[in-house]
Length: 565
Image 1 (spheres, rainbow, N blue to C red):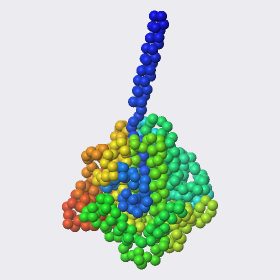
Image 2 (spheres, rainbow, N blue to C red):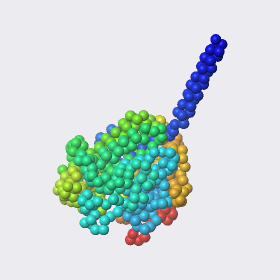
Image 3 (cartoon, rainbow, N blue to C red):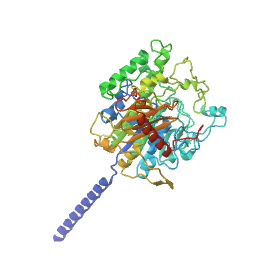
Image 4 (cartoon, one colour):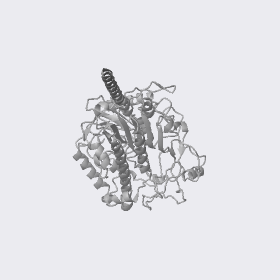
């Protein structure tokens, strides 16, 4: 009996030991799970400062508005004024010339103008992958040397999907060779939204797309698929969603265009004034510090515009493209909700530059612009606005007057260093950290700050060397304290140069010049945010000091290409 009792007792003790041991081990496993947040970085292409609803726009963007109402909206955030330079700075944490892309993707054989992310750089994906993150990207790359065929005829056959060539840039410059485990998107900068050129999956060219293909949907749906794949593991992920919308050509789905068919018939002046008033109501701008700048090319009023129908349609297509992008972002948010990842995910949204004033119709086919569709239909470049934009068979853009509206209340647009070119909306969403939900934040930030921010979030370090190369130190400042509601230092100075457009922002002052004019203009930027009162004649000593600072920065940061380059 005693033996039986003893055996029972020992069995119970053994059971309890195993139970407690298993429980403690399970607890250790739970505690060892990687709790670092996921990071989703969404970059719009040629989006104006006031286009989306939460920044004063009339375009329907409920998903971006949701992120804003549950996160922070930044009112002083900067890009580098154009597509590929901004992407270079954003991806590397450097000024874009330091990263090798001072202009576009052509190699100028100058250190700051190589046209690709040079060997002295490390990307966000490379740093985060080394820190134990999954990494993926969907969308527009545009930071590698783009390959052209020997003749324009050969290039057009390629663009028109009538010829096959395996690579669109040197493959070692592709995203999958710069830290991204997965990639789907376009290597070149401009695409036909219904049948994109330079489309790849990993490094494999995508030779055909489904009949109902629309590129914005594909970019966002690919991002959703990556989220679902990565969410199966207890490992954080970094996802870079590089939208092409609303960059020209103006191509959108009919059901989206229909929503805005009458919206812009009231014209440039009315839409711009309505946006400005909403921005004041939302507190995004203070009218005493940011009066509405004069309308560009104002000699033509909407009332006297002979092309009202075409122009109203153009802006309607632009709005439809932004609307469709927002729908896709909604699917990304839902995927994070469904996988239980939303609360511990940082979502950041911004634009690569101000809205584009370009008249792409005058360019015609060539380089990255097709002349025909895959099945041989001629593509129109309606210089005289004789064909309405929207379908695949028309290459068109909104032009400088609507771009001026999209960039309300600022002057100028994409490619310039005035606020209309470099000032971006920026939304930060992170339920577990951001408590000041729906608030505006005037922290002075720059796209190069994402590197320092993600390094701090991922609890890793910026490398001094990578794959045998010395890495240029980052100039970025982490935004993490700002997300947490704490004080954070800001940049003492910010600089830019792009095709001779340049600026230096130094405390209360901003010194700036246009690409076609080397004359410096001086503004007391905090009190003159729309750059209306040039004080250069009144304060020549300030101009002298700041221009010399800019010159010193330019010399250090490889800003000068050789004459004629």
